[in-house]
Image (cartoon, rainbow, N blue to C red; front, top):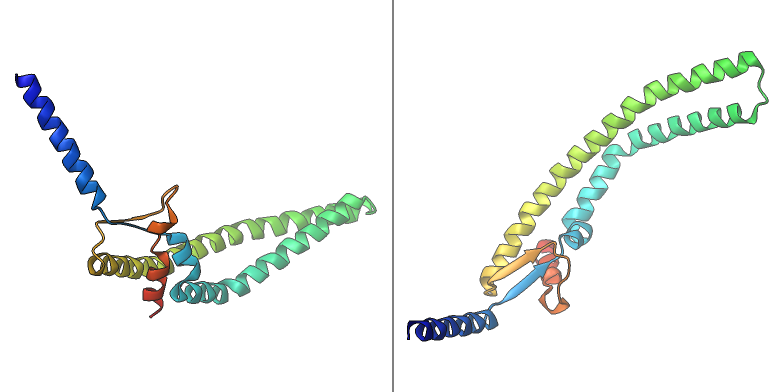
Amino acid sequence: MNVLRLLIAGVLCASAGVSAAADLRLGYVSTERVYREAKEAVTAQKRLESEFSAREKDLAAIAKRARDIQTQLETGKLSDGERKQKERDLLAIDRDFQPRQRDFRQELSQRRLEEFAVIQDHANKVIRDIAKSERFDLILQDVVYVDPRFDITERVLKALDE
């Protein structure tokens, strides 16, 4: 008798869970799209590009100079004295280039994190506002697969760009 009561209670709980799940309102936001398409993100990317473009060009020029020297060394048309000088030049360029490139990457990465943290905070606020105003129960970000009918990214982008 007790087993029958437990079984009935389990069936009732399961059916209540299915009913509640049917009323669940879900949404999905593609953070990748937000970071790529929102006006704030585009502006931040342009700001980073302008801030770091001169240093990037300098590094590219140094790398080209090193490649040119390497090509000269590989041709084998240099005298021993010229070869040794080119090898020393290449080593000097490499010693200068490596730390500058590492610093550049670290600073760019840090600035990108700073810029996009502001965008993420703003996007999260917009997502919460949409969730409250449109009565979503759950909004997900960064999932492996989602049915397009749950995608509210376009609404978030519009709200961000207002």
